[in-house]
Amino acid sequence: MPKERRNEILKQLNANGKIDIEDLVSKLNVSAMTIRRDLAFLEENDKIIRTHGGAILNKPLVVESTFASKEGKFNAQKKMIAQKAIEFIQEHSTILLDSGTTTLEIAKLLKEKKTITVVTNDIKIAAELIDTRVKVIVTGGELQNNVGTLFGPLTEQMLKNIHVDVFFLGAHAIDFKAGVTAPTFEKASIKKLMIEASEKTWLVADSSKFDQKSLTKVCGLNQISGVITDHSITSELKENISEYLEVVIVEGGE
Image 1 (cartoon, rainbow, N blue to C red):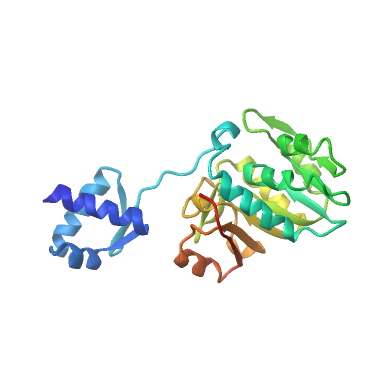
Image 2 (tube, one colour; image 1 turned 45 degrees about the vertical axis):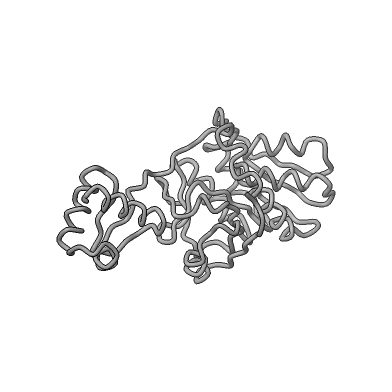
């Protein structure tokens, strides 16, 4: 029945991200014309986007979310990613921490360090390191309420005048073709300047951030040194991304 076929098509899309008409013809034992009618119906109802020879899910762009809404989500994965990230921090180095909950987990593991300098545009990260020996430099700028991020001309001016050893980049959305994207032009601009100010850039993001897009491009995957993520990333995506940068997978998590 049409409803059952269309549900199966959506099930396949949710599992694989894309589908081919020829594969559906074989799996559902119907004609290509029938599949095309099903795809047309699903597209009219904003469920999919038809492509040449198939379809992809009609995923909404990732939008900005508050700190409270992100806190606690994929927490085990973020902690594991942070534990791996600090292995790339050498003594007497200067590191740049992007705003976000994953980079906050990195900051929590730096409390016993005595010889490093942390530059950040995240007031929660700065507050986390108040009672430590870590030297902390806050970029300044306008505060984004409910998020804790500093942005704007003052932040940009600060970033244009520094140079650090390594930058840990947080991400709202990562796509194989679109690269790293952010929900606002202001956020993307800050992240671009952070990349330019760093010798190396490591993307730290749990697997839920992949196969997603947001409004404004930050960088292509070939513009960063590597990514640290959790084991739930698909083997196909890992293989594709590995063509452009080093991929470090952490085991464990929920």
